[in-house]
Amino acid sequence: MTLTQRKVGADLPAIREAFRAIIPAIGDNPLREGLEGTPERVAELFAELFEGMWQDPLAELEGGFDEGHQEMVLLRDIPFYSMCEHHFLPFFGVVHLGYIPKGRIVGIGKLSRVVEILSRRPQIQERLTSQIADTLDQGLNPLGAGVVIQAEHLCMKMREGRTAGSHVVTSANRGAFRNNAKTRAEFLAFVEGK
Image (cartoon, rainbow, N blue to C red):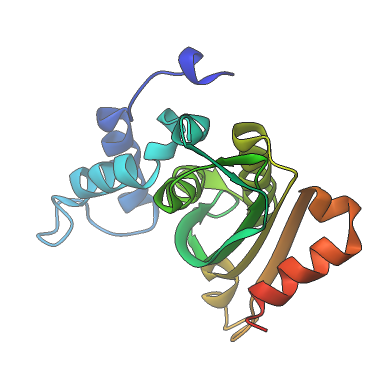
């Protein structure tokens, strides 16, 4: 389904009603003082957390500047927050991304915005990593692009303390970052801060 085929914006009444049904289903009273306004608050929160469903990350990479630059551009430690589509609990961490332009560069804030849009959808970390790399590859048409994500997943940490202290690391490489071992090694060295 393309962006133009999707309904734009969250269905707040449907989210409210769904959450109203969850509260008694877990054994609590939806009319209890602390819970009375919760369905409304959850609906507003979900509309914000999933706003990336109605945004096009490629639009962020339009324009740019022709600077003739053909050396690696790297942005490290971009914070992100997303929701695991399996349990609807957060996973969060940092994204490191890089690309080698064919002359055209974009503002650094545009790169962060791509991460924000794609993370504000029901996600899994592996797909998010690939989607960011694919968006850079399609939107910038660079010589190569790479993405590394380091994240913590509350769906595991909150359940009996499983995987406490662990991080999941995923990577995706396109073009020269995939095909050239030296380029990939340079990118990973920058990611590691060496």
